[in-house]
Length: 134
Image 1 (cartoon, rainbow, N blue to C red):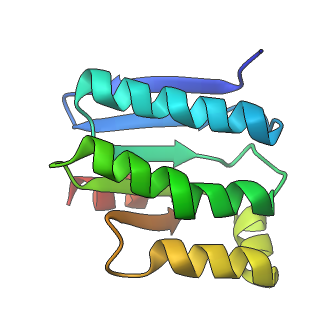
Image 2: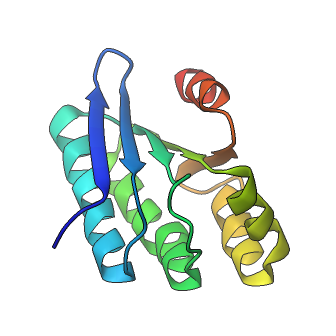
């Protein structure tokens, strides 16, 4: 299975950077998220920058899976580190998130305080990194 995922561990910043160059089917993306978690374990990194600017398809199934299943499980596995996830989006993708009621539901769930992970969406990489480092 070809991957569109590039991983860059930054132990000096305590951040794992994951960038997608393209989209893919749900099963492939789920496998790539598992690869991110494996790399996070290997390098002891609980702060993630997920660059999804080039993933142009919004899959409600994947949105539900990441916020309700994967992120909570990843946070549990990385404990005692607090999992912090900065998702770097394109303005177009963010507008679609805001216009789609299903995506809004998954985002509201993921962004809600009290989760065992912290999730934020960003358009600018500098602000995303600043939040991850705070």
